[in-house]
Length: 306
Ligand SMILES: [Fe+2]
Image 1: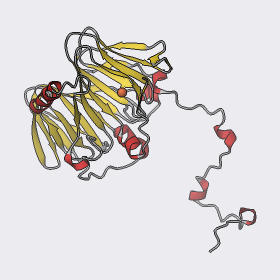
Image 2: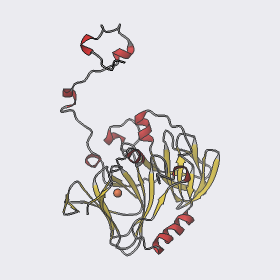
Image 3: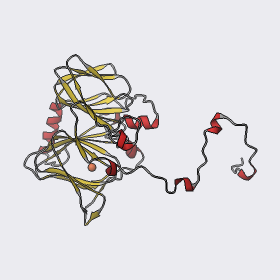
Image 4: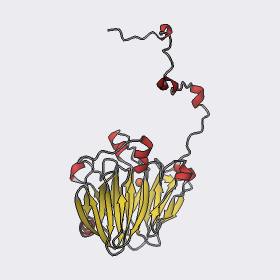
């Protein structure tokens, strides 16, 4: 078998075709000086308050033709009145849901789950899942629909994207268990039996109910996966620090973002950041990260400054 191709003696080009007409032939010079998309921290705020009802849509700032909070993630809230319903996870691979207020039902894959404030769910995307209002249901969500839309991929659900419910009472018990174990700065990581090895909530999304006890911190670190963090409980001395460079293990001229309940923080990929609780009460956040692609590619790049 001859593995070499002699391009210098290639046959004459075939007759024009639509497929050949679409081809572009770029050189190195087409890339040199080309404007790359700006890093997220240059175009988006570090944090916004969650809306009462609707997406956190930065598609204009990101130059994307579909709703997006970050290039590959969409966060927002839905308010669902009694007797009303909304679709969940359209065009997404998966969705992480936090029930903020009220009661209601989520329906997916032929199953119905009754939900109340504090519950967290993983919902398979693109299968017609829906949320139904009980007495004024309101929920926060993060999905990966912008990634699927960028790729043009249609999601086919598998057991690795399973409808999963973490009820508030069991989350509370687990938080107390970690407290009793003396764990002050991590809380509960949310995974399910269909993707146990990866310790993710969906093949794409990492979900973490992060409790910081008084005086505790997630010390300065960085990771390839962008994160969206919803502040469930804050206090007047809880905050994040973010910045591009380090000196002696600390962020140079950090941007400080104070935490308040209902705030949604956007952590860009690989930016140095830390979370600190200098107050007297616990703080609690729901962190969702676009971790699966990096985990699978062995490129998490999780590193600590110290
Ligand atoms: Fe982080």
